Structure formats: structure tokens, C-alpha cells
Amino acid sequence: MTETPQNPFEALFKQTQEMTQEWVKAVNPAMASFNPTQMDKMWPTLPAEVLEAFMGKQFNPEGLEAKTRLLLTLQGLTIQGAVAEPQIRLTVRHAMEAGATSQEIAETIGLAAMFGGVPAMNKAMQLAQEAIEGGEA
Image 1 (cartoon, one colour):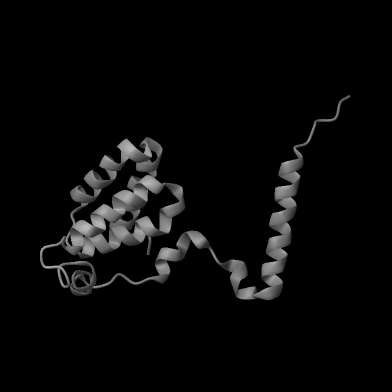
Image 2 (spheres, helix red, strand yellow):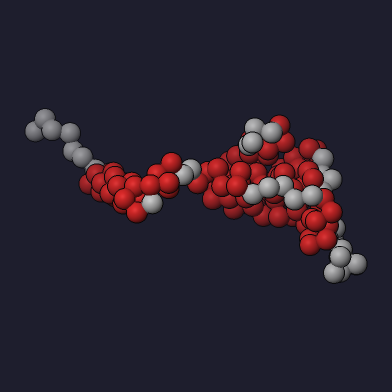
């Protein structure tokens, strides 16, 4: 027997992707060029005053300020890993707007490696660097 065995799941996945692409083109042609990894570009960066009003001490004077809340959010998103790429970019932009430094962002992501692992930390560092340098725009 000289035939190379084929993976039936690979063929099924390929067929499903092709069918989905055709369906999307038929139902909503504008979605054919949609890239879900670029979702964060659809949301503007909110001004620091707005972030502080809604995420800061406005309603809880003894609570955390917006910058700290955003850094905690970034740590949680880093631990989640690859499913949170657009959210990581968006959170980094907002944390910078709220006054976080590049060093604080790097330390926040680094601490997450204990819980999410080094691969998740490396990916989050890459995404954060892109957001800080303006590569996401």
C-alpha cells in the first residue's frame, strides 16, 4: 500500500471552513473581509478622565484608581492567554492613558507568568509592546 493515510478530521475542518466562508459571503458580504484579531481597533481609547470616572474612585473613594484596576485586568487577560488578544491590546492602551508606565505594564504581565505560564506571558508582552509602540493602529 503506497497511499499516504489522510486525517479525516483535517478534511472535515477544511470543508467546514470552506462552507462557512461561502455562507458568510452569501449572508453578509461585508463580513468576508472581517478580521476578528483586529477587533480592538474598532474601540477608541477613552480619555483618562472618563476612565477615572467610570473605573476609578468616583463611586468608591476608598477603592482602587483606574490605573490599578486596568493593570489587574491586564494580568487576568494575560493569564487567559491567546483568547484575549484584542482585549490585551485595548487594556494596554487604556492603562497607558490612565497613567501606567511601560515598566508597570511589563511587571504586571511578568507576574502573570506564575499563573498563566511563560508562553501566555510572552504573547502578552508582544501584544503590549505593539500597543505601546502604536503598532495596533
